Structures are given as C-alpha cells and as structure tokens.
Length: 219
Image (cartoon, rainbow, N blue to C red; front, side, top):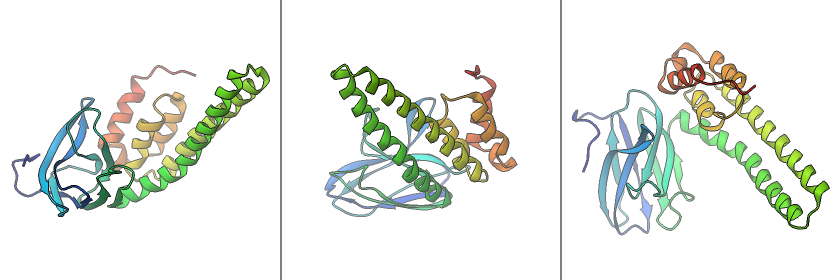
C-alpha cells in the first residue's frame, strides 16, 4: 500500500465496495501539476470493503480509480475531513457510483444534477444542428446555433448564481475553475468577489485569484 503521508494519523478516509471486483488495485488520487498523483492504493480480493486514507489540509476534489493510467476511468468526488463512502460496480465503475460524503459533495451533486439538464439539451441541439447541416438547411442551422448559444449562456448564468449562492463552500471557486474558465472575466470576478474570506484563501480560492490575475479579458 502506498501512503500519502508518513504521519500514521490520516484525516481522510475513503471506503466502500466495488461489486464484481474479484481482484484488482484501487487508487486514491488527486490532480497535481496537470497530472494524477496517487495518494494511497490497495490491492483488493473479492467484493470486500476497501479502505483508503490520506491527509489533506482542506476539502478538495479527489478521484477513485482502478488504474494509474492517464485515461483510466475515475470516480470524482469532493473529499472532506472525515469519511466518504463510495459503493459502485466493476461493470459501470463511474456511472454506478453512489457517494456518501461531506457537505461539499452534497452541494456538488446538487450542482451536477442541475447542470446536466443544460448539457443534455446541448446534445439534443447538436444532433439537430448536424442533421440540418447534412441536408443543407441553412435556416435550421442558424436557428439551432442560436439556440445552443442561448442554452450555453443560461448554463453559465446558472453556474455563476449557484457559486455565489454557495460562496461559503469550496465548491464555489471549484465551479468557476471547472466550468467557467473560458467565459468572460467579469463572470469569474463576480464569483471571486462574493467568496467569504475563508473560501477566498482556500486552495481553489487562491487558484481562482491567480487565474483571474493572469487572464486576458475576452470581453
């Protein structure tokens, strides 16, 4: 087993069961310098409960994976100081994941459930656009492009409002970095300026601050 810290007292525990996994290694990872870094790993045999641990200074996004490969399937979750339980299946490792975690994870799941509506609509509109282009329907093509642009704008506004509403959670700056990095600088400013002092000085708050400082406004 690999450990993320020499200190035997770890403040993060991730446990659960992967149904159908008879033998394999599970990895607890984080993103560091644009790469996945393994914090802990365990070799499992049979459908027994796994347990992974590490130390974090504050809540942040972690990943549970079955391989260290860059393109491996991973379950993202917002780890908190305490225990997170992840139960899933080997066949649908990421999509069957049921996560019982801290308040950050609950807020993230609420956000993802809502943002999924916009993404599903965009997929439908994209299909309409491709069909219109295939039959050279110029009017339909332009109309669908406008509908996609409107839907994307609504998605951005939802993300901004959601982040501002949850300004006292680490989720707020994370949303800005994950879903709004290519939007107007003013959108990011709105979120950052709403953050509570504690969140502004958190890992994602500081990353967002630095990102904004180095961002060339696209307005």
